[in-house]
Length: 160
Image 1 (cartoon, rainbow, N blue to C red):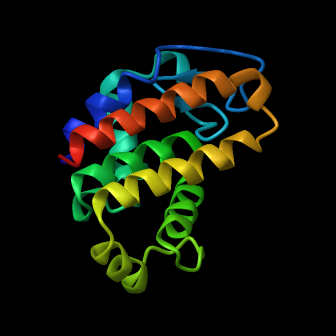
Image 2: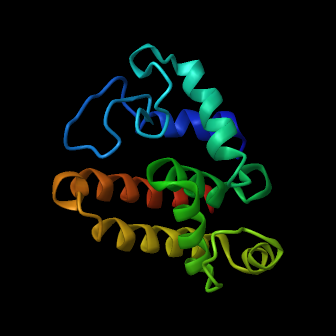
């Protein structure tokens, strides 16, 4: 999967401007939060501005282009939703390797030996388990669970 396809999929989950007091990200636009980008004018952020941020700060760090399409999008979406280190650590847990947050040569070698469907299911399971333990689960859990269900559906499409 290339970045443009991954971004188009992702942006379907990210609404326009939102300032929900129950969201720990605070003021958000296109999924980009004021908490993560305190110097940005979030309200004025364009879709193209957001796309550039997603490429530089999320897709490239999770090495999306070097992963099978089925897992590239999964890891990218998890990183956007919960942070890069968290996404990588839980992907490593799904692979059964040490969850040090560094997707290095050993993690890559294990991923190369693991079926794509096993990676997708394992990562979604780890992600859901992680999300249910968040303090905001009572407020946002239903939406997060639906998002992960959607990820499983994409996994079915992407691992044909």
